[in-house]
Length: 484
Image (cartoon, rainbow, N blue to C red; front, side):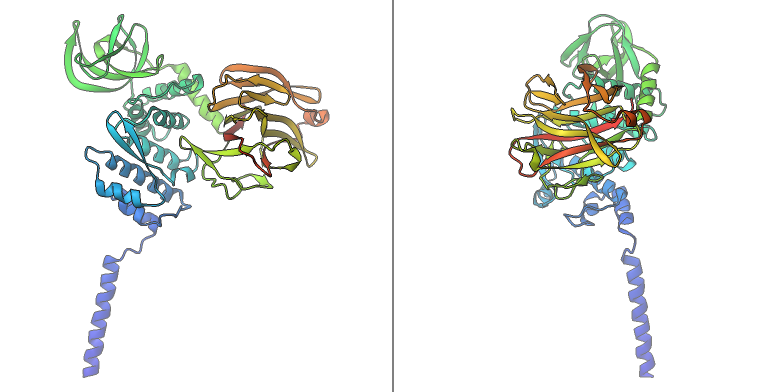
């Protein structure tokens, strides 16, 4: 009798334990937990699911972690900074807190260790980038706005037009540094594409100015500071509007914040001085052509590379080096070799398909001696054959023996080598900066004429590595190659 009672009590207790376990213990996969926590805005709990130094391999988890950090950064920069949250991140080893002094006080930026591991141009990468931009709660430095803008306009918004449009409009509210001709063209293409896409906040927001010397203001209303003047037929794209209606110079309307591409400025203008126009079809065609070309483009960058191991997709005798981050991008340092090329190694990446341009983004060295930093090879007969060697010193860029003197200001350069045609056993190329030709008729080193005629070769990009690096280096950010 006693045994049966004990057994019965034990069964009851075991049943209660099982019921309690299944009721209160979460057996789901970690990515499911992270997703639900993010949806419920429990961003800090998302981070606490992972060890501080852990970088997941799942795109979904990386996206959620990156988005959670962005949302927490937004909380840090709200009207009242959450001191407990700030202290948490100041103690957290793998999340650096950077303080930017702005016109509206200190902005606390959380350096994101997850974003750089996301696949470039992938859905997760675009979602994380859009969340970063949308979470900006007050002005940040112009350089940072420019950095985000350049990242955003390289992405294809199709499939996520609404959120992309919101993020772009939000970002253009902040002052940014002037961008180049190509980048400006990309921005206009994207704006006009979104302005003819229903459901976006930019739908039917292209316009031209009516009248002369129309005032632009820092805020909605004539009481705000004048920041410039525009006259017809200046084009613009409007980003948002103030709901209050009023009458100015006999025109009824309301104030709109608009982007003026000719001076790369955003300001408020009264809608009575705007005439709606249709989106530019030629810009939309260029937009579609650009993203069709991206499918055939190969892009090499160093995001996710930590210096200890050879960069992904490269092969060769790798010599470890520290990565260098500038303005949120990872650069690959290529050192000078003290005039001893025999002491150098190199790593290479094989390329598939035809190629007729090689675009490279780099920071020049302080060295007066040219440092080779890219080699372009043709591979045939199971051997590599050097076609072009590209070097840089503090003042110049060299392609084989052809030199172009830069303007002397040490800044990031974006140049491209265009393969124009073949002359016997040599390729003929030209060097460009954006839409400007710098050096024409650059001959390659001799190659096999019969192989070139038959097209039985493949391209290869190699990076020289000094075995005993010195302090001088070229910092390579990115290489793109494809067909124009």
